[in-house]
Length: 236
Image 1 (cartoon, rainbow, N blue to C red):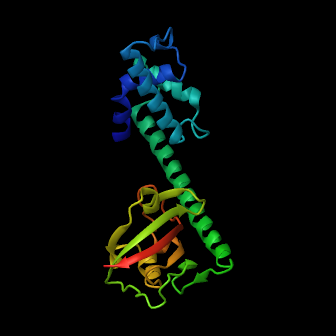
Image 2 (cartoon, rainbow, N blue to C red; image 1 turned 45 degrees about the vertical axis):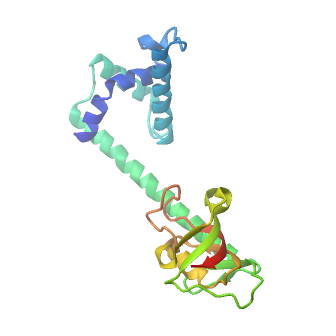
Image 3 (spheres, rainbow, N blue to C red; image 1 turned 135 degrees about the vertical axis):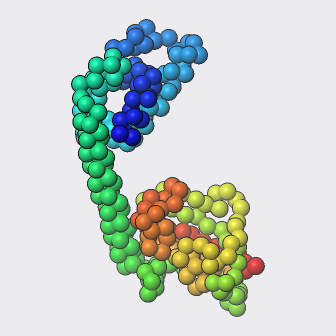
């Protein structure tokens, strides 16, 4: 019943959505975007439409004509299905979306694994027993420089990307190095930075199980392999 209640209480917003999607409501005719009320309503409609599209609700799994008719019927209080039928249909759709999400996650895991398998064959790339891969980009000028322990706090510059090259975080771009306890970060960093001396710069290729795993983090989806360029600036 919860899902159906949520649909029913958004009736006013659905009227705006109907206008946005090209329905025949009163607001669809002679739309004037010069006044505040119309601009606000239109903006809300655009936001709802984009949200529906981003969730795939306007995709191949939903009959868009039926969706529009459902909105009209809700507005006109002439709904053609019982509450139980609507709940069952929404639950079925929810199961389908969950299956699609699981398939997408499995695809990401396979993509990361394939990338790392290929990357392991690249010149200079070393793979540790845990599955962490690294490439030495630069050696520091001091061969006797210290190496951190897991219990140390370190200062680093880093640049993090997905395997497709998209940047999700970068202290380099911000122009501000960061400090943190080495045992308080993802396992790939804890292991990798202990291989470095102060002044070294490495590139880490981190499998998802040594990064954020099945949970993901912020802009990082679950099961994502990650790439970090890391420069060890100091041990505090």
